[in-house]
Length: 297
Image (cartoon, rainbow, N blue to C red; front, top):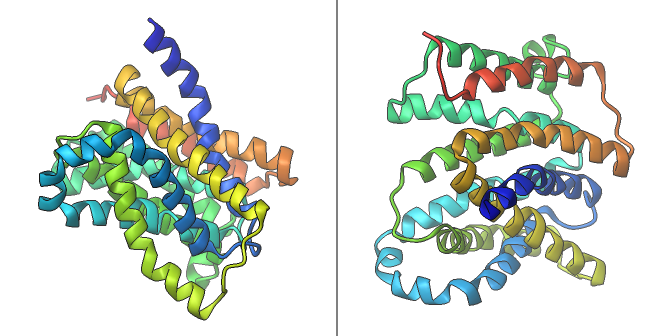
């Protein structure tokens, strides 16, 4: 019972932790180089996790040696493509847009699972996929379908689309990739891969774009993104999945745009536009249909 109560509390807290990363991206855009923010986020995350998982990682060193390329690839997708591009996007798009576009990931995950691993997709779920993707595309086009013909998009929205697709691939592969590690230890191994994947880009950014000169505020931000949208998001999500099940956990992704839009309005002064409301009106029923456990015949 205590585990279920904790999972229910986390169900409503985890979306806020995910949304906090998008608000941070918007709030610090132009202040901290994006790759540096991603690199230090995951480096500090690894440093915090290591004391708790070092023994398990040592005992599982044979798995690490055998599958190091897999952990590096997971790190590239989950902490690389879903890292710096999100922070770079904050310079040209809103936290509200980021949350709404990312909310399409559950149905994109269903789509990848269908074509990559042959998972069944009934008519009920297919209709949800169409609606949710239509909503996401409406937001990317900012309510102007002609933008697709003119190839006229906000760069930040396109970066979030790329990050959302990477997250979807990451989620599908993670589900179908066997492991001998518990969720926390596996996360630490993937984070180590993410630090390595980010390292060459961090060095290139430092050499050619900006030499780091971090103050107390910068280190506070690094620590925040390591603890809240880093450890708290990933481990909280794992607990929700373990106790309430994957179907209930997928609803977390639906709440992210609602939390994100509310927090962006409260903290950053962002406003919802008409195209946000239309996109959301398409996405919410589409997300529900696309990820519902029972499929209509």
